[in-house]
Image (spheres, rainbow, N blue to C red):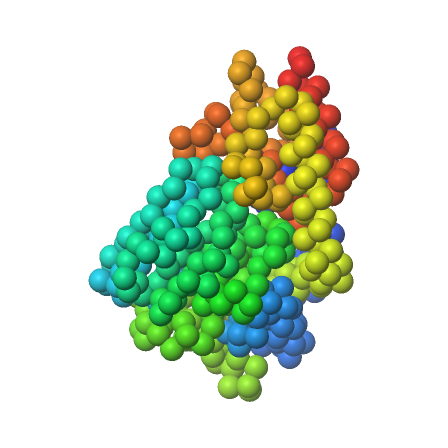
Length: 360
Ligand SMILES: *Cc1c(COP(=O)(O)O)cnc(C)c1O
């Protein structure tokens, strides 16, 4: 089966929007070419729309979603700062690792994988944290965490949200909720190849940012001058031009469809997939009422060979699904419906293919 037929239904990357793929073939521009700078500015504007924010410091960082995570911590946390981190999956664990490397005094609030975090418990874990951090959409478990409740109760702390698997797929309202800083990735619900990290930082976070962060490359003070539209733009590093052209086009496709329509499309695909899996007699893993539409976790049924089933789906049907991670490796499958992949026809295909493979 030709590789062009692959349907990417793992935890990411998803299939990019066709507009984003086509944009990769555009002629190369110089990184200071006014045409490119115009596209960069427009990309930042489109990101503001998608993040639902007016934050001037909104830009695509050069690097994948993890670069956004690193940028968020190195620019806000200094040694000894109390940082509360909600952990109910792999990406919460990773935040703990990154914050610890910045010297933070990490207070981790653990919840069983598959369950949502308890906002009250997270908010009462420390009297005066500098930062509270949580993952909005836990890609390792398929659980949605209540970032809005954390933002509403954050008090004087800064609130950081990992929106790598939520932005573009489910509502994210940076200004409406009061999130101080957030990062995402391009290859999940945004529907673009991996390589950039959409990032946004509000005035409270800028006011308290670390003046000389230990990372030169991810210093948001310098990056803000580079992304500035005021004419005072200062060279920092060569932008990944082709990736930004692709993100610009992908965001264009997303906004042409409309954010609300894209959320509704993800919601419908998630519902059809989850209902269909239950009709096949399979058991969903994430707690009912807190399931992400864009990433469904389902228990590997007794007697099925995890790796063999995923290999058959890939080789016979060209469909990629993901395996479990951590303690759930071999125990759950993770089926993504993100970005351009979130189409009813893909849901129908994966359900039929899974039924056929499981019946062998
Ligand atoms: C994928 C993912 C990341 C890491 O992003 P990369 O682009 O792989 O660096 C971080 N957080 C969450 C929730 C993710 O799903």
